Image 1: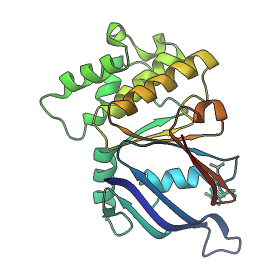
Image 2: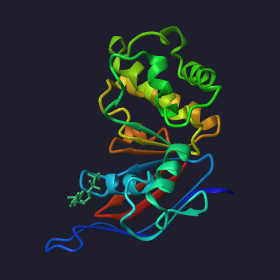
Image 3: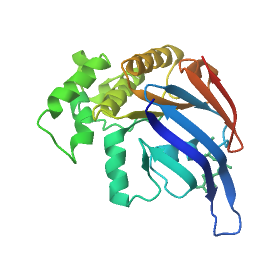
Image 4: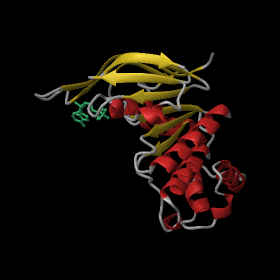
Length: 226
Ligand code: ADP
């Protein structure tokens, strides 16, 4: 089985050269296979964001090993790292991070700005269709509901056909009904083959994943698979 994420003995310390070092992660071992749907759970301060930043190639200052699709990321230059980030990882955050005055199509096309290809519009339309927003394609995102906006964010994340979809509390700003419909969409996307790592503190949301990993004080305390 192909490993998308292979993390061995990860340790993350903030302010390591100062007087108040904080160990945010220690001794984390985690592997995620292609096609997995994993939820990472933990209370505030448990280390979820720190782990997310490492997995999402947003933080290279850690000890231990992290291989993304077999590539050791710690030794990569900043430019290789950002190339890898844009080609391999699709992000969906709690905050929607969309351009409000731009249309759905324009927002979904954003990741292609730095590496345009001739089939961009076609792929964007396909991604918009996948999230069920084809009838809103030319609407500005400030005319959409929270749930629809998060669908745009998912379409944008899928646009570059990432090997990993990373979602950080993606339903945190949504009502229960919209949250459940977004989670059903994530399941669909996963069933179509995209590997997903989801961060959440809600049991109701984590139950959509096939595997749940709990962290506490920077350590994995429990792992459960369906
Ligand atoms: P969570 O996302 O689960 O709330 P974090 O990864 O944000 O947890 O935090 C884990 C620990 O690391 C906490 O003790 C937090 O105070 C600390 N921490 C997080 N970011 C920083 C930072 N930039 N500088 C110093 N300490 C930090």
